[in-house]
Image (cartoon, rainbow, N blue to C red; front, top):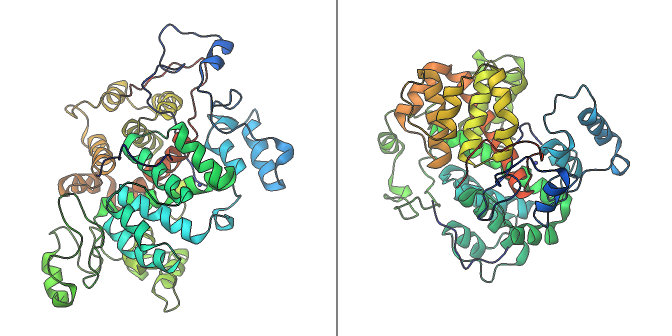
Length: 435
């Protein structure tokens, strides 16, 4: 992973609750001697954080919302609500955004810029290789693409583009978004588009997590366009000189040649009717999918159609959520969900292993495989064959795909809530140490 440049320019609709960030100066979340009064807590918040919402976005007002979002508002403030954070969490923040990301006002050029930022930060060669041509088609300048590709300083980059690139670099490299970067992004995008952009980047991160986990490779005749750490961009053997049989021999032993990943191509006869429709769309000559069955859409056919109906039990979902919270320094997410994890039966000893990044000695095999999977994919942007094999053994293919998507959902909210710098309620102690 590249490192954030000190000279750099200053600087969307899914489930999960994540936030908080590390700071060099103690705040209400890090200051010993609590409890604070609400007034003391509010006065300790950063200047760009609204006391009502404990974030950089004020609470949504019901009278400002359309009918669809009024319904979502009412669900979050209802006494029967299952939301842990109400209007102060990601669901409440998204009330300021587009009701559906397909209706976003963020233009396609900017979307592709954000996609390349995520691909760069997550070392996702496949996603970059598929989308650099799309970005060029949408008008993203080659010079800006080169700056993202090689993590160059942002000198000369248009201010809005620079703010988006910087936001992505800060989140993935520092696990925080500075007030200056937030202010710059808000200035150029506005609140609605900024929240939409965070969710778009979160969606791309979800894809990257899945692709990195199953080690998807580019087609044999597509040269890599993204340099990996210690490797130059471009194929070691020119693509035109590499035949398909030769390419197959270069793949790792655990990668299937038909899918170019650790998961074989799905068979149409193994799918239900809804899955068959998804399959047919991806193999149709009219498909808009860039990767067909070999990309994230094809991989998703192995998993649950609806993640709300996943067979991954709630205890393991909460374990995975805490792993993501730990790896992204998510004080808010951890604080809200440690009690939930305990309620779902996750043992305090395992929680302590995750919290303090301890060795996995003594952790049962299934839980250890999930923790190690999350640590590897979120720290190194790759998963070793041994870790993948262990996770597949204990979860099975369907649940492993679902778990990758769940971790992606938690990362999606992490991007939003780090950007908005959401703080714990004043009467909750931080339970996660951050550097």
